[in-house]
Length: 202
Image (cartoon, rainbow, N blue to C red; front, side, top):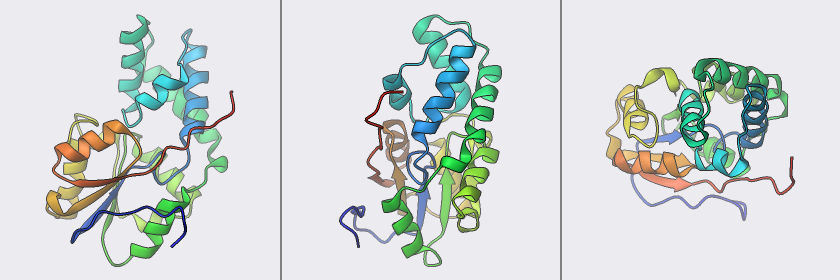
């Protein structure tokens, strides 16, 4: 165990549920760059502090939040699609979060895993493929798989149902406040993954 290992709560957990971006993948800086470019192309701005505050919110919801916050009239599907295309063009720069990768490798084959993310399934699969982790996650819950995103409990409850596991026996790995509130609302214990916020200015 390294000095940066995550400290997991005690419990007889039957499944591990992982958020994707900022939890398994150290991809939040790339997501911010792609969001900023897509929003600026559409005529708006997206401050970095708001981006991190809205971590875990599905793509369409982020654009809707920007419209409400700033009074923009951005086209949510169009801006979200442009953001994803920019992000996917930078996928080769994504690396795994070491402390979470350590947990995945240690528990693989002993306990079932699922991904629970606000990103589209295609983006999740492509990120996992880049990290050579796709085969570790037979269950992937993306933005298409639920109606209400985090902080609503529906995403994590959907994963537990797909795994046929009691929600109370699931452990959630999350980096964002919205995801932790979602896990708590689902009756699940959680471990917070420290957020990797870049110190440099873009």
